Every structure is written in C-alpha cells, then in structure tokens.
Length: 257
Picture 1 (cartoon, one colour):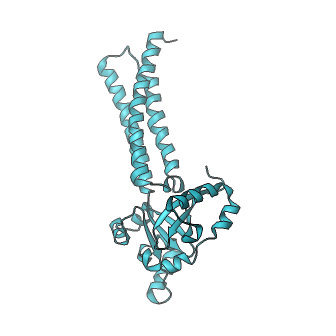
Picture 2: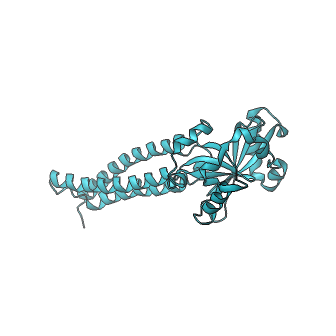
Picture 3: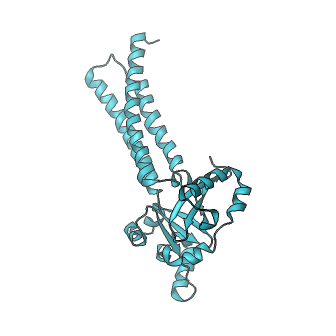
C-alpha cells in the first residue's frame, strides 16, 4: 500500500490535470455552440454525441493516467517525461475527437420534397466540394438552400447515377442547390398544420407559443416546416418572407438519447 502523502500528491496532480483539461473542454463547448453547432443543431446533428466522446478523452483519460503513473519519488526530469507522454496521448486523442466533430458540423440545411435536411461538412468535402460555394446562398451558418431535382437530359442521368451508383442522396448533391428565397412558394406548400402538431406532441406547445409570442404574431402569420436530422427532428418556424424566426425541438428519435 502506498504511503498517505504519496496518495495525496497523486490525487493533487490528477486534480490539477483535471482543472486544466476542464478549461480546454469549456473552450471547446463555446466554439461548438457559437460556431459549429448553433442552436438547434447541437442536439439534432450530433454535437452532443461528439462532445461526450471528447469529454471522455479530455476530462477522464488524461487525469486518470496521471493518477495512475504519478510518483513523487521520481526526479523532476522523470516526472516531466511521464507527464509529457500523458499530455501527448491526451492531445492526440483530443485532436482526433475534435476533427470528427468538426467534419460532422452542419454546413447546409437543404429543402427536399417536403422537409429540410441537415448536410454535414464531410458529406460535401468527401465529394471534393469547396464549402465556400455555399456563401452565394446566404450568410447564415448553416445556410438554407433549395434542392431542385432535374427532370430530363444529361442532368437527370447524372443525378440518377450519383443517387444509384454513388449512393449520394439528393440533399447532399451540391450542384442541385438553389437559393431558398427563389422557391418559397414550393417550400411553403409543405407547411405543416401547427394545431395538429401541438395536439400530437403536447410537450411542443410551450415552445411554439414562446416563439410566436416573441414574434408578436398569431399562428396564421407563420409557416411551419420539418427539419429531419440525424438524432432528432426540429420544427422550423418562418415568416412569410422566408426569415427563420425560431425553432422548436421535437421528441428524440426512437433509440437515440
């Protein structure tokens, strides 16, 4: 059994390591919420799931290894080498986790048929698409776009090939993107019955009423569209000019937490 002073110093070292890791984690959370996964995409597109992975690496792995290997009987040089190896392992794992989260951040919200779909960055960059091309569709991040499926000619053949052979869904085919503002009539034609939604999902009522109250409008003044995402669906509320005025989270999808 280790002497009590040794155990205390180990716990102190692990505690200091944890506090440093917590600072890094807090910074990452801020970046996630402000830039990569702004509301409501944090819960809908996997920000929370990715953050749990990073938390396991940053807040558990590093401090735990420090607790195990820290030995105050060693020289300063030996301690520095041991802790340096721990930090390198932690940083490497952390960078891997951050990269995975960054690649899955939503960069577009594409309307197809009757619903919006989130498009992660990796879905476009894996096709060689320069994400800067999205800037021409708007300044919001992620940007809202309309998916215009071709109906004839070479464009239709290419669309079908990418869909059937390459397994690229329409909402991830960037060449089909069009400005949302030019297709509002088609988009709003899929507006949902808000009364039916609130009746089917009573827990959403307060959220809808809050958004409408902040906008100082009645239910008939707005349009309600579904956002289909990986982990949970979202109700998007637009004014008649196509401006998004608010969002309301739908229940989590079955089997996802």
